[in-house]
Amino acid sequence: MAGIVIVGAQWGDEGKGKVVDLLAERAEAVVRFQGGNNAGHTIIRDGETFKFHLIPSGILYPGRKCVIGNGCVIDPKVLTDEIDGLKARGIDVSGLRISANAHVIMPYHMLLDHAGEARLGKLQIGTTRRGIGPCYADKASRLGIRVQDLLDEKILKKKITAAIEPKRLALRPFAKDPSLDLHSMAEEYLTYGHRIEQFIADTSSLVWDLLDTGKNVIFEGAQGVLLDIDHGTYPFVTSSNPVAGAATTGSGVGPRDIDEVWGVAKAYVTRVGAGPFPTELDDDLGAELRERGGEFGTTTGRPRRTGWLDLVALKYAARINTLTSLAITKLDVLSGFDRLHVCTRYRGEEGAIFDRFPYHQSVLHHATAEYEELPGWKEDISLARSESDLPATAREYLQYVSDFVGIPVAIVGVGPGREQIIWTSSSQSSLAAPTAA
Ligand code: IMP
Image (tube, rainbow, N blue to C red; front, top):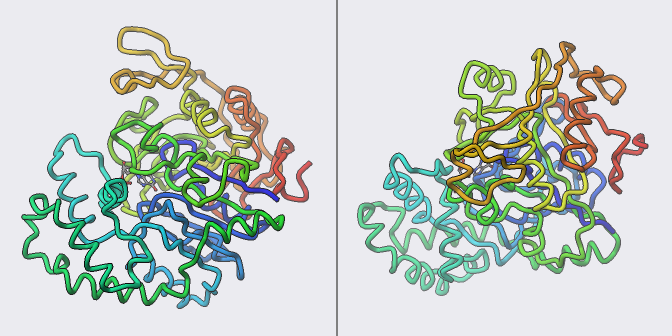
């Protein structure tokens, strides 16, 4: 049995979807445990592009159980559109399972997300405006609507009324918005409930049964550790816990069910939305990295901020998640740079040196990155399929990262395609490709 958690080790968009897709081939189930349709995963399979926001990427394997766990927040319109889209492309969705306890994003959550950002003005977080924060806020306030509530008209109406009551003032500007009418809202959401009813299940016991009978289960994180509401760059974070520990609470298994934790990191760093980013390249080099890496959001289309690889942050991610393996993606994007920089420490406003990720918001906001310079490579590496196909300097780059962070690099991405991957000899995962040592 193996429970394998895959998390983003940066600010999201690290290419987790591709890693999950690869490992899912050898697993029985893929479980999402937090977040909602603020996430976006792109998978390229046989030249066809698939974009997912809610459904775990494992759905492309016929018969795989793909679970949306209790820790997720679900916009049922997005979910049903995604189901319809997959069906229209001939994909079997019978393996989908949705936790009855997952929370539902309601129209007022989206309105409040927009209004909250507008009110913050210059201080805005840059959320995806999908209603994620307000939905999690209602969950914590015990005013949330859960998936199971969509199956009972009386309960649903009662709960919507209770949820809206304390928001009256904030929702006043939307008083005439038809999406807030109790009866049409309840009708619409009951229809969604009816449409997803066949997929609603006790997902915690389903996952437990799979692990108990020796199956591999992948827990697929969304966003990344630096967007974690507790451990990220608060308040410029998402409203859930993308760290590995949340795989347990967000899916209903215990810590002893987790055997491996993979952290996915790009060979450089990107971030969308506002907040500190010590290695940001706010110049032509950053723009070049954005163009080469196609760094535009899957969910919002926003251009991503770009910067050099931050090893202080990556080491922090390794600790907070107890990573067992690293997956380094998009190494090919670095081809052609003469010299590469990796951040090995921060310098604070008053000159203090930080070897560890600072816990204090103001320190981080003013921290500047100090770099180690490493030689680059000119070769196109997109056809490399083993470590020996890589130029020596690319291998040195990976070795430097692995040594600094203290975690083996198990796989390396060298292009967007599924086959553009290298399994390294240091991969000790139970899901390692048969060819790996
Ligand atoms: P929210 O999750 O929509 O509330 O947005 C909060 C912050 O998380 C913003 O900075 C978003 O840009 C960021 N964010 C949310 N989801 C993702 C993601 O999947 N990738 C990258 N950033 C994300």
